[in-house]
Length: 294
Image 1 (cartoon, rainbow, N blue to C red):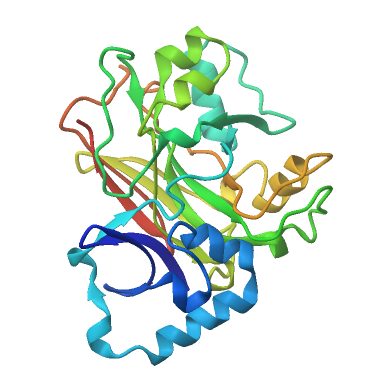
Image 2 (cartoon, rainbow, N blue to C red):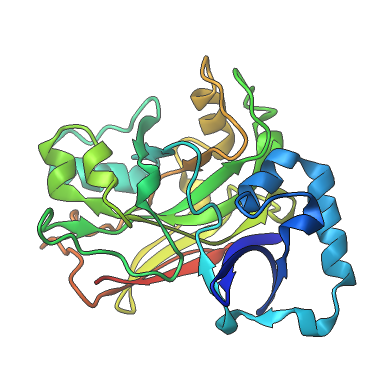
């Protein structure tokens, strides 16, 4: 199931996407309220998800709207907690980053972890603010994101994927000058609008192998990043096990799993986003973000 958050005629709604059409689902239909949406469904568990699946199967054809008639928002427009992010999780990206910083090209033995503020979350087709008064080095990073469905602490790697609700796409937009100036990634990663997400969440049952998904980004139509999640240093299951060691992960938590090589600051010469640039980020089998820098 593809589950989204949309606006139709100015009203926010949970929605189910099938192909190029979308079915808005009223909160009363799944026992929720007008503020709950996708997060409420995740918290409610499998029974509510099956109820929504049944509503979709019974819906008349005219109830399904073309995608171009609605505004898609981030699936979880305001997460309850900061997005958990993983850095240097693809070998070539780790190596290109260390080369720019003139550091020895060694791979991390443990995941590099930081967070992005909830206020950075942005829509899958919304504008990315340039923030020219704050940064001159805005960069792109396509990432597979994991949405937790069942919380837990000390989750085993073997059981980790059973805790996943689904997967989405994130562009971890990064202000490199802020990131490196402050020696800790939070400020450089958390500018308002610096986390386009979506276009929807694909439930875990629809992804045969999360460690075999093509992942790509483009800027103004030029391919910038192209890899596969099989090249992650730390798998999704390993990340969940590591992040939950002594720390409780909760339903609705979002984990961005790292970006492959090809980001702007590591290019020779460096390339940074400018006003008017069009950034596309795609994970095969999940979806594509398309955002213009303003």
